[in-house]
Each structure stands twice: as structure tokens, then as C-alpha cells.
Image 1: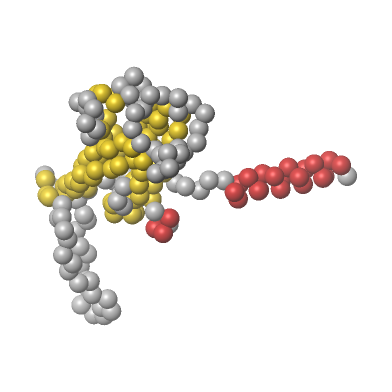
Image 2: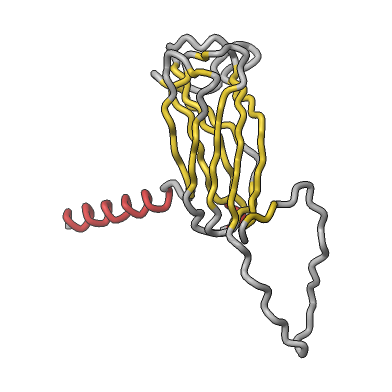
Amino acid sequence: MCSRRILFGSVMGVLLCALTACVRDEAYLCFMPVDLSGWDKTESLDFRIDSLPESALYAPQLLVRKAVAGNYPYQSLTLEVRQRWVLPEPPPPQQRNPSERTYLVSLPQQRSRVPRVRKNRLLLERTDTVVCRFMTPAGDLMAGGVSLSQYACPLPPLSLPRGAEGRIVVRHLMLKEVVPGISDVGISLSASPSQH
């Protein structure tokens, strides 16, 4: 009788863990170290995304880890994020059977920036300036941590097809040539939950 209770409790514990586990499906997550004594303005961090697993609306995030006891002298960090995506060639349109009725017709939409065609592939580029705030206006830290604090700065979402390959380059835009106190910079790319 006692062994059945233990077995039942174990099974329920495993089920509870499975149901409450993190379901965020990240297509890409990578951190690159920065010299804690100083990130030079000429140094850029180069993230390469090999191939996306599915077509989706992706929500990229810039992740910054700052030393809690470090000597970072500012309340925020301004960064330039350059993204370059090589999109696979779209499949040729399928021939429509003339006897089939069409109920939905897509209307052409104007785009602010049309991807360029390069050697049978599409190229999508965008550059964003991101201000990552570390403190509230009252001077309190916005993130907790014992030795490092991690801050997430969302980037504009991108609709990317399966097989897209990307390169994301990050550099700081601070007036000071060498910025101390930053430990790591990372990129997280996950499919938006509404697309699953």
C-alpha cells in the first residue's frame, strides 16, 4: 500500500513538472563574452544563425549581462544591432485549376523596405538602435542578481521563412571609447506564440 502511494506521488510529480515546464521554443540562443574591464568601441560581436527550423514570426531579443559589483558608469547602454538575413528562394507558384473557385484574393500591399534579390536568394537587412536601461529613474536596478544582472531588450519582430540564414552584429554606441562592466551580450530568437 505504501509503495503504491510513493509510485502515485512520483507519477503525479513528474506530470506536474511536465505540465509546468518552460514551453518557450527558442530557435537560437547564444552569448558572447565581452572583456569585463572594457568593451572597445571598435569591437563588434558577430552572431551567425545557420538555418531557421520553421517559417514563423520571430521575436528577437538582445540580452545584456552586466556585472552587479562592476564599475559600469552609466544608467543605460546604447547599442547598434545590424541584422542581415538571407532568405531561401520561394517555391514557384502552383498552377491553379481553372475549374476551382477562388474565395480569397490577396491584395498587393506596399512595403516600406523590399528585400533585394541576390543570386536567386532574397536579402533582408535592418539596423536598429537599442537603448538598454539598467536603472529606474529613481536609481534602482531594474534586474536582480548576485554577481551578474541580465537585461532583455526586445527587437522588432521579423517574419522569416524556414531555412533563412542570419548574421546579427552588435556594437556599442557610447561616447566613451572603452565601456567597462559589461560581461556578456547575447541574442535570443524564438517563434512568436501566436504562430504555433
